[in-house]
Length: 399
Image (tube, rainbow, N blue to C red; front, top):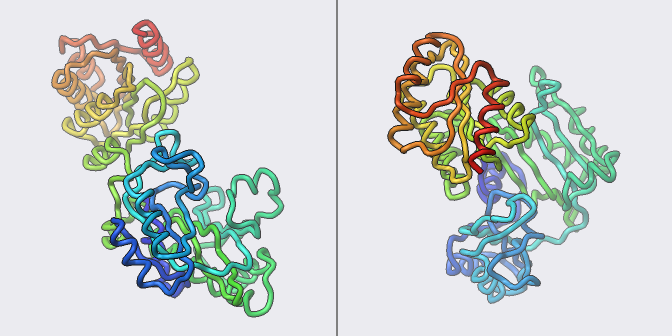
């Protein structure tokens, strides 16, 4: 789960981490009121969407030379003008795609005198089984560009969860950022607090870009993004309450109600599979046969008929889907349960796209019998390769 910048900063502040003073605003009036609470004379007005690259982004509804989603305002009147232009309009960035995202929230903060910008992020490093702290002297720009053009300017420090954050980790951060004196000491303290926040909140990613050194010598989190392990949200009801469903795909929201792992993709062949590994293999073999999957959907190991039916309906609610491939290996999951769910959903939505089903495992013959006697034009497949070839062929013929 992702949250907005202002929400992330509120969480970090609770761990004693310095952030600029700022206030969220859902309307022009609230933006003006927020600016009135700040000392000025410089304000920053930030669009709040779940995507990076806001500063360089462009609004669809504004002239091409209009400013992006992060603006400096020199007066309260400028804040009002910026809020009027940004709220309700669609911001397109490198991370949103051409569709962009509508700006429904703003964050008005105090201006900061910046001496230098740095990059600092914490991630789960699955290769080492540790938390990785990634730091760079090149903050305020795309870390992907830094990695491509000057990878030597990025340092990765891994932290063993068995021992936790140690003093030498903090010194490594300060050294990598080329800090000295009191600023280096501040960096060590900051890194420790960030690690503590990352672990305590069950984060999957915490990115600060930029982390700034002010002209006064202090370190300040100027912009941050946070995402959380959804499986741990039951421990953090306060974080879960920060979820903004307007930033999420409606089909993914619907899938979460049934505990389905669903991610929309750009292809036209819908996939329903049980098991993440099998789902990845299914998407790979679809692409190997010259087509592209429309989604990742894992119904899990013990899905009910109702859950399978809901998954099928979610796939069909995507107008891009031109065909469906169901690939089930019945271990805990029973093939007859899958078949009953497919038949029920297909009849309810009046299926009008090709459907290929490959079943194997527990109660496989019962499942095949249910499909065969359903009265639906379901195409059976012997194995995954056969299923992929058939669905790709059917979709191409229908086109």
